[in-house]
Structure formats: C-alpha cells, structure tokens
Amino acid sequence: MRGEREDGGPRVRRCEGGRTSVVSRNINLVYGGGSIGLMGLVSQAVHGGGGHVIGVIPKTLMPRELTGETVGEVKAVADMHQRKAEMAKHSDAFIALPGGYGTLEELLEVITWAQLGIHDKPVGLLNVDGYYNSLLSFIDKAVEEGFISPSAREIILSAPTAKELMMKLEEYAPCHERAALKLNWEIEQLGYL
View 1 (cartoon, helix red, strand yellow):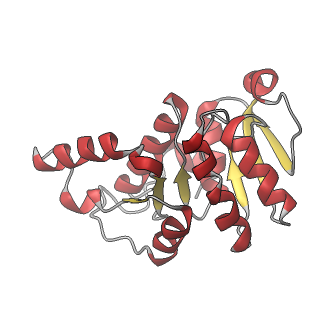
View 2: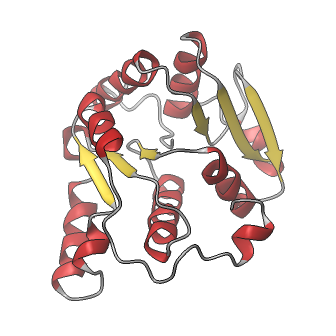
View 3: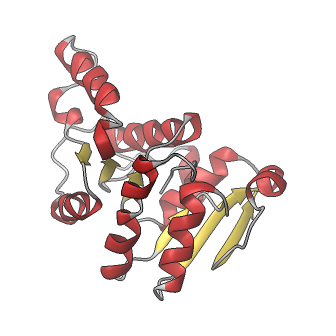
C-alpha cells in the first residue's frame, strides 16, 4: 500500500476511510515501512485494529521515513528493488492511495509484473476525488493506440471509495494475457516465487 502525504487536506481525510475498510475486514498490511504520511496513518490503524503490519524499507531511507512511531514488523532491505520484491512476496493484493513519484513507480512495476505473469494478484487504485483519472485516461489512450492490450487494461481496478475498491479486489479474477507463464528470472533469486 502506497501513499505518502498526510497533510493533503480534504482528499487525505477521504482516504482515511481506507483505514476503516482494511481494519473492518481483518486484513494485514504490507507497506513501504514509513511512519510518515498516509502510509504511517494506515499502518497505525491496521496495527491498532489487531492486524499484522509488515513495513519494508531500504536502510538508506530509514532516517527520512521513520520519523515517528513505527508499528509492527519493520524489515530493512538493501535497495528499492528488494523492497518491492519483499512487499510483493508477502502481499495478496496491491492498493495505491493518492501519492507521488514513489507511489507511481511501485504501482507501474506491480502492473508490469502482472502483465508479464510474475504474479496474478489484484492491483487497485483508490481514486478519491478522481485523483487517478488522468492516469487512467493515459492508460486507456495507450490501449486505444495499441501500446497496451485490452486484456492487460483489466489488470488495474479503481474505485472512488475504499469500501468499493475492497469489494473489487476481493472479486478479482485475472483475465489478461500474460507475456509468459510464471516467469522466474531475477525475482526468483529474491525469493518471490
């Protein structure tokens, strides 16, 4: 789960509904490991609600992103690639909250991994106030232009509320063509498969 900014005003307050949806479903959390921003707020809510929390953070980011109270298990890793591999290894689904470059980078990587057949887990966008509308329009344009297959477009789920997104994630069944079945290149070496 990604999303960094906690002082983003009304949109952030609407994102906080995601905490309730996750906690009420007794879902555990694997996230970027920071104690700041939306990541920190969600991790505290899940932990406070009795869920297991695993934060995965590169050692070099610890001074910057661990400025407040950490909850649950914190796994320090060597780099960003190992962070994403560890998060993917321990996750059943991926959710992107409104965020910046880091959120987009991690989101696009897990979408690409799904397209390649590395995983078949659902990928969801919490599209509060249409935050991800431009990204979804870009992806739809790429489908229209033939850069993304129509079936690969189905990898991405989105909803304006956490409750609706959680329902879509629970109902997800992979239906896209994969570039290959169960690829096992470098990701296998990191223990993902």
